Figure: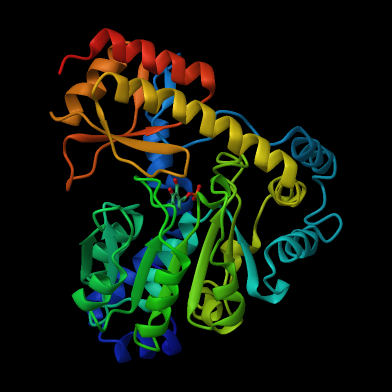
Length: 385
Ligand SMILES: Cc1ncc(COP(=O)(O)O)c(C=O)c1O
């Protein structure tokens, strides 16, 4: 269902090189915003194919739910579900996040996950005349939005140590509208140093937006890029509660950016989508972000389970892409990944997908220790070099 764009937006799109036909597509996209939210992320689509009873290590979900203290906060809000917003839940979330991240509350917006703002930033800042630049392989959601919009999407291979090659990214399209960095990167789990990210922020066109997707940042014991969004007006940071906080099905995400940057992303629906969050998710998120000790503990659990699987694979002579700091890693089977995916599924272990640039390489999400032990046992059964 298409949406009326209004004269201001039509003028904006015309200035940015959109044809009438492309404007009709944008209208259809915006009309389908609710459907986008329903369908969810690429990972949600993968998770939806889950096989009952299988070990589910294919969609980068957390192996467990919210911290108990956060689940309690959500239950409390269930009982107050008659109110749209019982007691300034949004404000409490923004205050908690601001205190942890050092980002001013007026630069924080909450969303039902981070997929919606990720596609919005492409709609608002890329166009047929201003492309999108990403790494390859990376989280592909923005490729789809860009391709659908008719914006040129340039995919730049990672460096030999699996960082984003920021200089090559700029050289590949020096006049793009959006540069997308995913750190830790989905699917490699590797981190791009803040200095590289800052270099791209300082050298990209002034009116281009640098998007830094930090969906997996809580798994990393190291710095994040939040201060860039606190101090610059051309950087957007995406966060989600779908990963370490175990809230993928509850739907909560954040953007950190200047109000002016966000305003252009909101123009299309007056902020209605982002304004309509379940208070259960908001309260659960508020109670989660300040739990420094629990975050550290869950991270350590994940690292131990990841190490269990990686060392098992290496001992069998199977190549693992090094350097993951997140709840995923990639395995180079040296033969088509599809065959290994099917063989493991026959053992009731559901691993992740591969990317076209690396057809022999599968992404494995890190589950609980016992799930990774089941993965190791399945490998023992199916692996032949
Ligand atoms: C890098 C990255 N960004 C964004 C998302 C979107 O997730 P959500 O909409 O659940 O926040 C995902 C999901 O897996 C992801 O891997």
